[in-house]
Length: 398
Image (cartoon, rainbow, N blue to C red; front, side, top):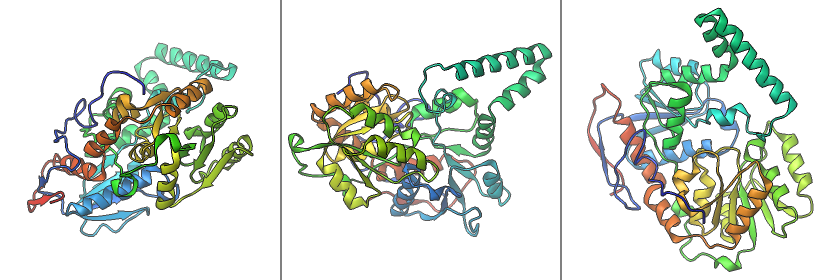
């Protein structure tokens, strides 16, 4: 496994702290509000993926903790009785919808750093087109700077409308809940947002994916990728990296509805040797993990990589992208690859193929990254919101 300085678990250092015992079950938490929470993702539920899993599993874990929870994927949920909105993929108009009704909003940010977004997740090699674009932007900023402060501000705002939109959303909510310390730092660094930040980790379900007696590592027969098929996830780079390696590759996941051409390109590149399992149930997914020696996630960027946590519980060796915040979760117990280099992907997969997963990774996940831990951290974040009172109750598993 790749070495490096040990990383504290998400929520134990950096932007905000969350002291917790080194135990697979979180300690009971006391909180006084809210009584009824809406977890809301307007319009985005149509695209399956980790963000939807995060919402649904967080909602279920909060309900298990004694909170009254609703989930909604529509544009205008019924506001009756809602005391707090916990949003995903919100825009400013969504926040205003609730603020007009006197309801505070917290946001799970799922933020991709500026360094990723500037190159739109693609290869970072300079092309004639990209160099021309950089030259144009430099000249535009130079002219604006000569015209004065107001012209420079306007140039900055129009150059990246997405950052302006994100700033408006992030600054308008009461609290931001990134999935990693580094994600919160990126929000501060890139956007200068002043909203309080309380990192809340992502989680995994041991009841589904923890295998007490896993198939011996040497008897596992293939490399596995689990996730939605789209350019950001870089399945095509993975296929090209393993094409002449002699390793068997299984890809499980739905096609992204907006990237059908990319999915077809992946199938052409893997024709005759890659098994495309398509969308799978939880039981089918658990079986796939159980037979895989290596799970690889070579995305251009990941805030977490939920499937890496699932695969690790199932006894797979883990290969993850080096871009993003997966290292906060996996620490030195995974192998990391550069998604822009097929040679790096292949080398990482070969290293994982020959190296059984360390037991410390499985225990780390059980100690810090179950959905029960997510509920505990989420309730602690809610409790930091000012000016709310209510009935105090015990939450958490008995």
